[in-house]
Length: 438
Image (cartoon, rainbow, N blue to C red; front, top):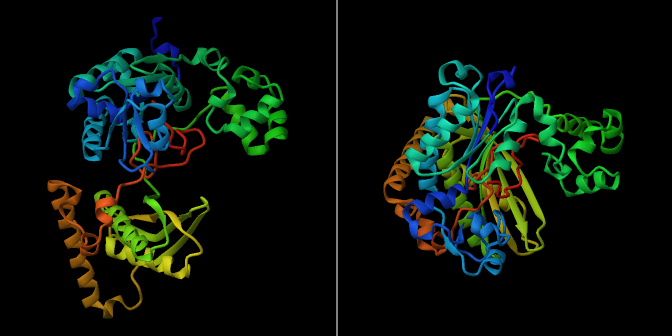
């Protein structure tokens, strides 16, 4: 690697740290005999999706968000492992602790990746390359896991560099070499360029970022629209002024479940809503927030998706409150027109703690009910502690224990449980589409 120092980054130094096949890597720590083999982390159901795949499995075409049934056809000899989300969270905390030792300017964008602004850390820790190498070494020493890092003058280029360096790599893109780095890349590699936009650009003879960079802003806006044209004009030049934001606030939290078979059984659907509501509420409590609105999502057998949202009288933080709103939304839909493939519950318009709740007009005269709700919230918090100690099956709502749904329930990917599934939609950040990126 050519010598690189702070003069190559006259304005900012941004690092993008991204773990390599994170879920698989964590599993291999306790199963070293699987190193070098095709390994896939996914739920056990035939309709589950891949959460992570080893590089040996990826060589056969397996990638995250792929249906498990298809993955098994591509890699029939792979070892399939059910996810251990508590382990992934524990290792994620260790990794983020390493990053915070370098700088306070850490923006965690998913369980296994983060941006760092190390501009001010160079005087204390040395050159950007030395800082990046130190991070990779410390993560490996403390966790046994491998990180790839991109170093650049902005978040967009740093992310592109870390992706290009995988696996087990470090790629530095000095500010003066951004054009040299971007120009050979296909236009489809730019964030926000999907298959349709890429095809549209290729029809115009624009196949590489270098070709795109030769086009004027006016030309791109005529072909793609004002906003999209300006967006691609900037990205083709490596322009990205977004700062590293140390605290990312999720605007919503949700969970989804795909049934083993499409169903019109209202009892089973409501059981799923109950479990999902408690899962969402647990995440809310862990983050110290409440929700002012609840959304319901239904996807039918023909993959048509319907969503409905309900604003609550008071911000909710318990599974019982969230489930009541979700069930009300479901019942308001009336009789089912067909079978349901997937259901989802999402807490919206999140607020910090319970102090920000807007009280209803009658709350002062309804003290008994409010005290009962507070006691119920305490009971659910106690349930959280029991699950933390004994696992998610340690305690469940009675309605789930008496039925068979709890044994069949698996958290769905794409709801915060997948590598790289960032909490925010950002056209110049890691995409919402939960594809394997490491």
